Length: 513
Ligand code: GAP
Image 1: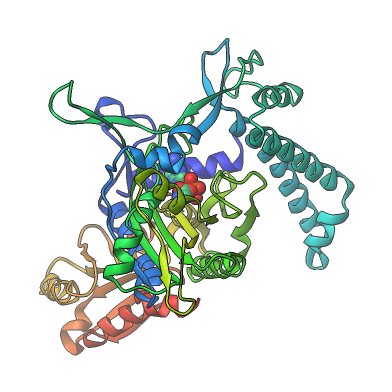
Image 2: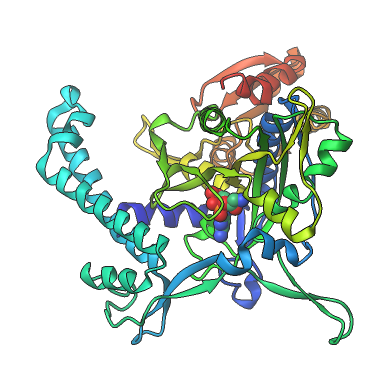
């Protein structure tokens, strides 16, 4: 098992042990790639959603939020292209009878080469110490350059074949690279076929009258079909945006890597309606703005990168991914797409209704172009959670497990601990809880020695522990312990609200953008 696998296993078990994520229907042995968010997970997820909503909707005068239904008229998906083109290329292994996404097999092959590059870089960094120049090493080391070329040619050939729908060449590539079934090692593959990812369902009580529906595979279409309603009722002027968060469903062939690729997941999307011809500048604007949002959380600049698409979706004239370094390598976290006027034009054609904007300055009507930012909430959760989980060596030769969640996102902001369960200390601690809970999600914890309680709260991601002791009875002060530095300071009870607010306030964090 590699270090990466090991770290990822720790992430999954920690998420369960500390009440973040459970397998869905676990008592029935679970349901593949479906997960439930537990007591802490639901809070973390809500905080991420709020952080996105505040940055995208509340802080922009020209962006409003909606909450469209999951069920949509079935023609929506004909118009959007999902009925005909929302497919994944799948391949079966004839021996193991296991089904895989052909493109994922090839991407995983490349990820292994990338892991080799990382290893070479680590070795060289150790060898050269402070004088190590990573960029120069990547550009000049023969072995690393060869590895990178192999990745580039492989991915580029795959993208071209997929674009041309040349599925025979995708299979040929898998065979040439000698890619084996990851479970059995067999290289006995079927041809590559396309598989539609939408889940079908029925609306109506009787079989004869039932209407075939789809569970939405993206939230975006709920925004497109409401474009004119929102524009008119909100008197919105271009450029303006419509945002929403909500569930989406995809019958993923290979749903795995925990909550990274799920069959039921949540998206946070924003469609920004612009004048045709301005899409290039808005594309750059939203790339920069979204990257700043990510960086404001302080999870390390080196953990993010852009990946421009070679194969563009049927609706896009430019697209990039913000990739994050997950425990299994760099993978897509968010997509930024210049969607042209494709969607609105399609809905105009299929509905027979005009979806145009009248520009008073130009005294002319046009179909707006659209810039989209689309991030998976569950994927963001995994990015935050996995990046925060660390094992730290302490001075006294012990280790501690600490979940260094950005304080603004942490589910529980402070735990209030009476030093002992007597002498009136629990009563004061409970009073502090009752007072702080109006503003923050706080916890009361009196079980076990205080050191063990600190460790428990560290592992839970709680940024502050507040200890009530015998001095509190004398002077109304408490000890506040900071999770990351483990530093402790003595403060007045009346100052607690201000101290916590400073640390967890969305404004403080978003101002870093
Ligand atoms: N409206 C555009 C759209 O849906 P996408 O790249 O297919 O684009 C956007 O999805 C984001 O949704 C991805 O970057 C990812 O974060 C998230 N996402 C997509 N499929 C997912 C899945 N099966 N499980 C979890 N998140 C997913």
